[in-house]
Structure formats: C-alpha cells, structure tokens
Image (tube, rainbow, N blue to C red; front, top):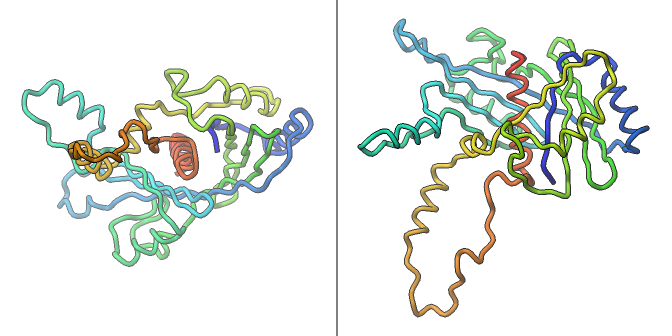
Length: 289
C-alpha cells in the first residue's frame, strides 16, 4: 500500500462514474479490480439533557465502514488540541496538566456493528444526527454510502471512484482517490498537505465536464500527528526511555539500530485510517453526515 490523495467532486454529473471509467480504460489502460463500497453515519451526544437547562456543546461521533473495519472520529469541543496545549505550556510558568484526550480522536474498531450493539446495550447518550431521541433503531441507520469501482493503472497506481449516495437514493457528487503503491510514506510536500504527484494523476482521470468543481481533501503532517496521538503509547515510550541498560550485557543492540514502526505510515490499516479520516472530513464539510 502507498500514499493516497482524495478529491471531492461536488457537482459531478449523473454519468460521472461512467465518464471516469471510460477515461481510465481508454486513456490509461486501466483495469477494474473490484467494487469500492463505504458506508457512513454520525451521532451526537445528548448531555444537554443532564445540564438542567445549561448551555452544553454536544460531542460528535462519525463512523465510516471500510471493508472489515469501522473508523470512528470523535470530536469533543471542550477538549484542547495539542497545538493549544503546546502554546499554553510555552506561555505559562507552571506545568500544564495534560488532558485525558484531545479534541479529535480516531479509533479503529472491528467487526462492523459492534459499536452500535455496545451503545444499545449501555443505553448510551448518543443519538443519530438524522433521528430524534428515542427513535427505534437509532444506532443502525446508514446515512449514506459510497459506491463505485477500484481500478489498477499499471502496477503503480490504484484509483477508487464512487458516487456519494444518500439513504433516500439521491446522489451527492463523487469521491475520487488515487494511491501510489511504490511510495509507502511521504511527508507533506505543500503547506496544505497535498502531493503534486498524486494531484497530477487525479487531474488526469477527472471527467471532462464544464464547470466541474473538484476540491482536494488534505491534512498536514502536524494535524495528522495530533489525530493519531495515543496516551498509552506515549507513556510506554517515556518509560522505556528511562530504563538503564546493564553495562555488562554483551548482546545489547543500540536502540537506533532497530527499525521501528512510525505512526502515520501509509501502509495497512494506517493507510485506511488516513483515508477514512479524509473521507469523513469531506462528507462533514458538505453537511452530508
């Protein structure tokens, strides 16, 4: 798996998927490798019911099902971002107490449907953003799907193209994703977190339609690091750093000589996590979830 880029086509024509299919097959010698199918839903907390009329900003939770995994994006408006904490730490003379979590948290769950069962079992104070409190099956409704195809262009490129379809059947544009397989990781090449290599490929497969609105969906490395923050992993790393290595141990290998997994690698579930987070962001910005 390699680096990916995502584009949202907000006003794609009804035959947009067919136009992209023809373009990839005829101009890029591409081949269909399978179906691209995603489903999304969103929830909001109902904590305001416990505030006795006080003003309470609700938490938001967005779920995207991709293959056998569900990616959950949680947003707590009361929690700080890591950038906020670093800024206040630099301005303050006293130590800053680190929060239990930051504003944005991204989780990976499996199998699909397990979270909804848990919410129902606990009678959790979350409701679907598209339903009123107390509605039957409030945790099970899929609000939209992405349905399309996965293409291979040569041995280096994978392209995913799909229509964004609401629960009622209305089509709300398209999503187009390109993946460059030879490069497993890449830092942001531009301030917006985009890559010229991916942008060029995506532009070449867009349908030739007048006044087409194509918006790149990106995230910077700093923002992505903030989303991926893991308190337990950070604490374990700190504990390992203070351990002393016995001087008479002849079989010690220097820590820098051991290759490690770097968070944010564009491989396996990590690639899917980044892709899912960008897709959720695109759908949120259009008010679809």
